Image 1: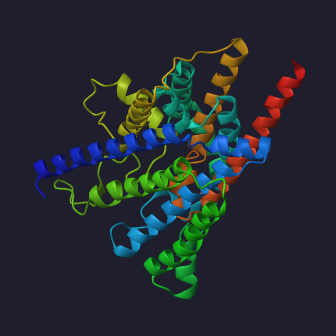
Image 2: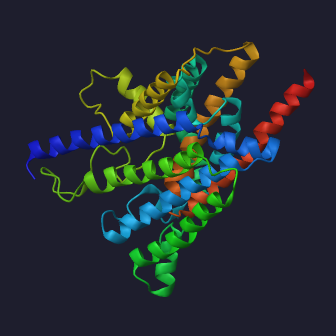
Image 3: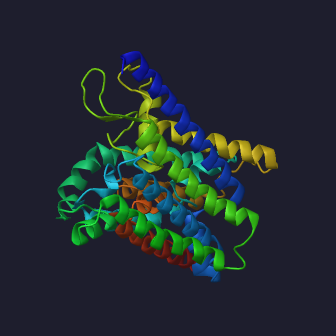
Length: 370
């Protein structure tokens, strides 16, 4: 591949990622897809409808990811989620921090971007604080603390960090086939479970579950298939175009918020290139804005009180620190990570759920004091 063709393909990858992110923002705004909302509905009302939507999205994403791996379109082992290094304490502690923070901040990273598109000025504040905290945890003073504490508590799995890798290694099965079989079992079960709920079977709920799941799959295809170049024209190394991690990526929002702030602030620095994460952050806001304008639901929203401001800022900081420490958010670990059937993602999601429950109880405690 010539360098000019390489650069042209990189531009195509960025535009494709942006377009898919626009679809995510539009669908999330239209269907009120929200992981925190799903947990809240169960804890406060015993309603599993939005959790079924989330479960369907995970199921579709699992089926799509391992279906593409079986077809040879992507390499299932080339993501951060399938690494054999299991930093379980980071995933658990980071997940708890993120889950607690998203309750205080009225939604996770993806919901923050969706709400910005719908007119929420307080979500804009959450975005800046979360991005700053994430950057400090990626490369700043908090990064030193993270690396020297929780990241050191880990163990290695020679076969890899995804369950299909264990099955393949243990049974001597071809990896792509093991992945496909487990995807059919796990992903199929989640989709069936979602559809068994009679209250779930409405257009918006199915659109949320199916649409968000397909968006995750589409992002894996864009990064892992369209954006994969076997030989860089200058270095001759295999490369995933426009990737911040250097590996195949799908949607995640904590670290990309930090990369977005970095790109905006240092825009004149020619070494700061537009990346997959940055365009997806912008795409979600654009998609949500488009949906809000079409539906007539766009509304300016500000903070109600000083306490409301303080809680959102604290929650944003927790999400920034927690999301980076856990290697992902409710979308990064909860959808993209789980689509690979990653053991680390399961630990992180467990932490997020526990943190969210703690956040709801903290909110109840605050209400009782008033």
